[in-house]
Length: 258
Ligand code: ADP
Image (cartoon, rainbow, N blue to C red; front, side, top):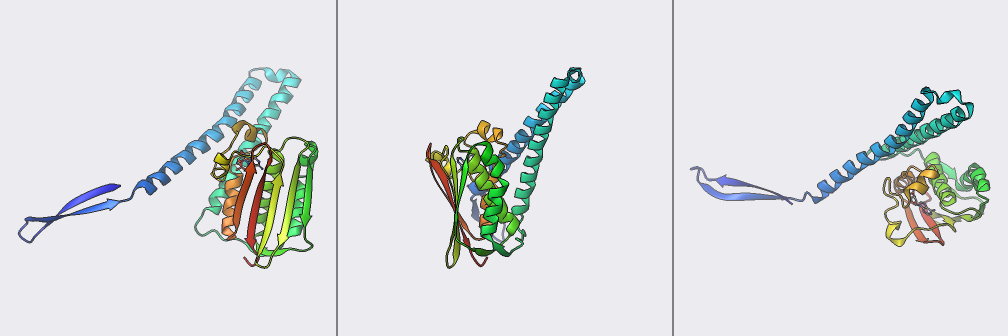
């Protein structure tokens, strides 16, 4: 609490009483701390690839470019690290757009089965590289009122995560169920899973169970925060159920009529 007090005077200037104001500042402090943590995280996440880009560029300029194999290898690193920074900045911009008070979804009638098929096609190469199988179970035609591009981000993020956090040879299931009022989308994997202690935190910006693993798979730690925002904007719900070394299931329920 923040407490402020002031005397009350009567018309002769004598102290008659005191007003005391209690302000609950714990919430304000918490928000302020979150903002500071966020800025610190962003700076750190940008600094890491930038240091690497600068270092490799300097080494090339100092003469390493004379050796073709080294030149090739270093330029590859510079390219990949720039790409990481680009993804991070794009995710940050997306997150900040979604967090605007006046953010408007662009809704239309969306064919969810088509969207699921497109996502599977988009991530087919990644699945093949890891010798993984994507199983799709869905009804014929499922339509909802939603923002197609935002919804695509949700499905792509969840399926990409399922592929990233499952060892080679594993499985991903995408199930789509049509209901009266809601559509239910389940994305499930038989991967590394998440400890119960951490499941509620993974929707936080930059929260990652294993930083190195996320980084190696090109993760920014912002994917699930973006997913959560988009589901909320659609007035939907997202739930996670996970067991370590067994796998993870994300269940999303979206109202059909927006
Ligand atoms: P990242 O870019 O790190 O993947 P996300 O916001 O998408 O960021 O996810 C946050 C963290 O949640 C990940 O770093 C990972 O630790 C955990 N996670 C997300 N999806 C899964 C999954 N399907 N299985 C296991 N862990 C997951």
